[in-house]
Length: 362
Image 1 (cartoon, rainbow, N blue to C red):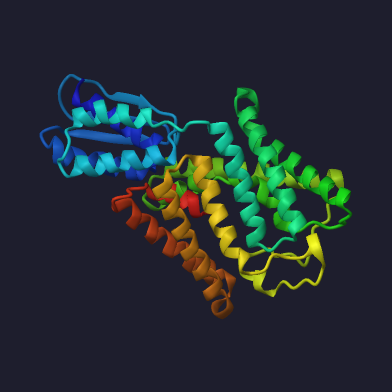
Image 2 (tube, rainbow, N blue to C red; image 1 turned 180 degrees about the horizontal axis):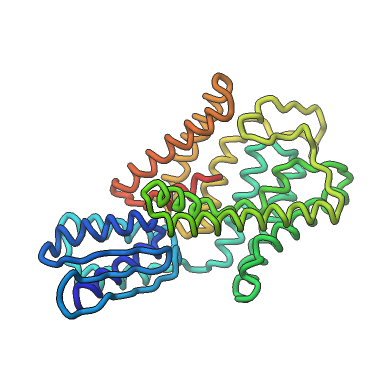
């Protein structure tokens, strides 16, 4: 295997692990400078392709395709740790692409359907609790999310239907939540009882990568990711709007629209119509972190990191919002989370920053 082929294969593996095109190119250039300084290679990275061109010799450019972000969070962390060892000279490029890559691919996520269903249910229930939806809405959102998780997995196996999965899931989820509320005797539905079951479909990691690439002058890759992410969000919004119009859904205007607003929500309704106390918010934070970790295949250590990061984000958000407003609080929280993600990426956990951001995007 030539050096060009090795670097193309390494770049494809990084893309599968969820690295942005910018981070992938920077990593390849750094590894080349440290491990093969005699080789003059040029790298061009797209969202699902890596081009490696030698500066001299008769060898042509090498193209390697990948399935972007096809690895689990645990596998992504293993790839990142492998890159650390490559940079430090602990392993050779041949070993990284041989035994190490085989070990990473062997750690595939088991029971993905069950993990996705349970993870989506925990995420939805946690979000409903965080936004202080009534207990009946928490239960409905959790059950609908479990069903939508299974439907999403099945629809993605039908290739022609994959493009409209966000619209279909958002439509079905909205109808089911609204109909469940009507059957229970409630005329209005909290906003996040509708949004929580489909939150896992939000392309947060993709948009994060897009912004990183655009700010690094990778205009083609950044713009393509951003457009695709916005289109997915548009499909989701259209699905919610279509479901609401079809079923006549009425949103409770007194429910929380932003996380910073939950402290001002008061209710004296009894039993299942009552709101979770603020103490349950921390349980909601843990449920969101565990749900995302389950759905995306994180291990125990990575789940613990997720819970800690989300706990810090939540504490910062509710601490800053009363003084500086929700907009400043959200911006400050996002900045802190980005710094935490980069630090974790360079720590022994070695979670790629975009994967860590995906866990905290909710």
